[in-house]
Amino acid sequence: MSKEDLSKKDLNEQTIIFPESEIKYLYACGDENRKIAKFFEYKNEYGSRYLKKIRVYADCRTEKAEFKIKICDLNSNNEPGLIVHEERFVAKEGSFWIEKDVINAKIVIPKNGLFLVVDWIKSEENKHKVNSLRKNGEMKIHISYEPSIGSFPSEKNSTWLMLNGKWKKDEIINLPLAKYRGSYSDLAIELEF
Image 1 (spheres, rainbow, N blue to C red):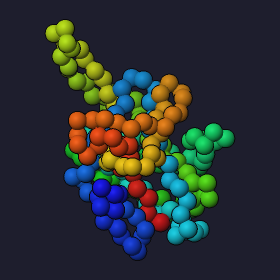
Image 2 (spheres, one colour; image 1 turned 180 degrees about the vertical axis):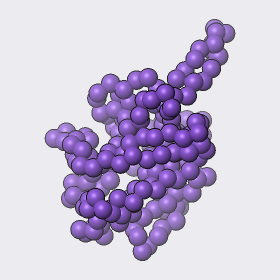
Image 3 (cartoon, one colour; image 1 turned 135 degrees about the vertical axis):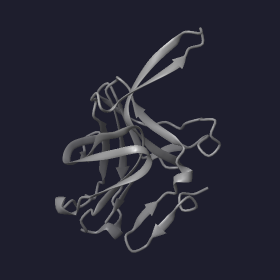
């Protein structure tokens, strides 16, 4: 199934909005130094238009959680590089698309593309504790920081992960979810021009 089959296009704004029913896999952050990023290629239809809005699909298990989206250039290794702009987002409890107007930042997508990086804020307000049963029967407390960021299955790999200070492209995932098996997990982050 192609990306177009999973989405509806708003031809006036050249944006793709994925239905929530297709978003099954969530990226979370624990105690490690973790970030995720999505690469956006330049397209001719963007021209020199300013970026109007950023949309992010977030799942939050606390009353609310604040996180950052950083717009970054590419570095010499084609990984997320210098921060061009940063916005703070607030996710409310539940699963929602969150939208932020960024037209006043006057950002134009460069010919080599750009990254949107999700940066979790590790605060007490964003902390979520989960008890889990280990194979040996012991209970273990896992800590995560809210919110989790949604993704959808894709044939194209545009997701990058940073773990302990190093960026790497995400790998094909083999989850029990049939739509994701053998696919890449593309972050549910969209741009509107």
